[in-house]
Image 1 (tube, rainbow, N blue to C red):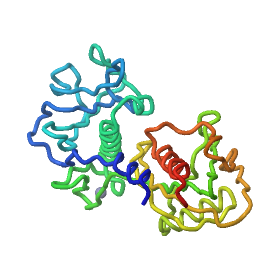
Image 2 (cartoon, rainbow, N blue to C red):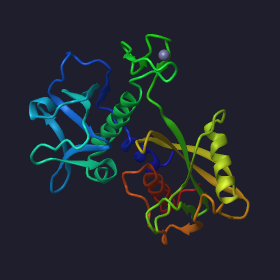
Image 3 (cartoon, protein in one colour):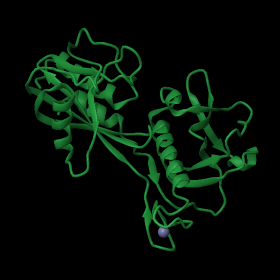
Length: 290
Ligand SMILES: [Zn+2]
């Protein structure tokens, strides 16, 4: 494993946080609070970095919680997520921000926790009633799950695995852009895992479908929780093994081979896509073979 890649893996670890399901007390306590109004997170924007509500619980600041969840401990601090009614005014000095706006302004650790909080709030909101029989559900002890007391159905937070593949041909990288990207941005290829597939099968299929290229030497790079809305990004590198680059225009607006000294606009540094590209670029610049 190259130096660049081990560095990237270390950067994605969130080792200080201890996930727990059950609050140490029955009422919302003091700690780090990830409070959402719809899809927006309560935060304050400092000059350098955004801050999350820290200290007294939301009710002590005039925020009525619809639901709240205990997330676990970050060092000595308890961490919670919570949800308030639509149109709730933010406390003085704070505002509601989309996660996309905040992700460049939170530390990796806080962004990871915000992503976790967002997905747990969404899951809890969406599973108050059983998807099988419609009865109200209840939290299961000791698990991040809700169960139906009537029919026994369980509901767990949903994750959608996405495989990301950065294809390399010697010193060139295969980058593509989706019509959903911000203008001019290019990234690695990516696609959802289909039922019944292994991650490796998804990687080969996606690259073949999206750009008509075959790959070899698939190697795991790192993974990242991506809360838009509940993806798990699993990133790989691969070597070009044949085929003519021919984008499927239903999914890909443009694709090309890029030299490391002439790269197009890339995703933000917080995303695993950028870390993957940066690590491979560093490897190529240091003369590393693929
Ligand atoms: Zn049920």
